[in-house]
Image (spheres, rainbow, N blue to C red):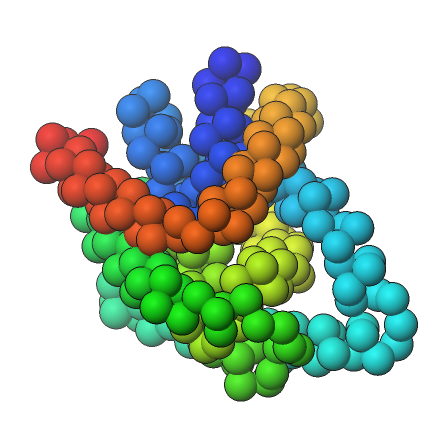
Length: 288
């Protein structure tokens, strides 16, 4: 795989990961159009590093806001940490249960089958994109109807955090069901101010990314290809290049996302997801 292809994937990942449009769906489509295998160990390694790059972009972008809001004193930290841990716990439980159910259902009788083997199926990505689009549209419509309430201040409650964490768990098994789009929309529907839902969603992403990355690293380590000549050392350099590119692309995406949120045009992301679902479905029927 050339550095140009990695650069393209890094830009796609960085721009889409932090927008509510599902980076996974966009990266899978880009890989297929470039003739790459999304399920290969090399691509798994690249994607792990791309996700790491966008995680650092989130930390860099939100650090000052998080420091002034969540780390200014012990009480503020507890007010954030308890809902965040509760949301993450629900994410882990719901996500793991769904993954196991899907693996047992789709791979009945197949040894060592993993849900990642379904991630390149465009016929599954299209409806997931459509579902995310509908959720974003509903949140955008409510935002316009309750503009005054949307700007109200207040701490995130455990109930609101629980809904956000539960929906984030639903995102784990399904490529196309945008994590950021679903969690921010859920927060808005639960009465969380839009700016607070955005910050909390991306804070959850930082908490969630390390275990997700570790899962993919372990999957790569268990892959049979490693024992047949896959050189991880030589594969790491282009992956690091992709991580750096994804970091800068992610920073740009975050700046754009904040402007769209402040402008009250959240519903447009829902329209985009619905249009993307149609495109992905057409690509599937075209043989990709």
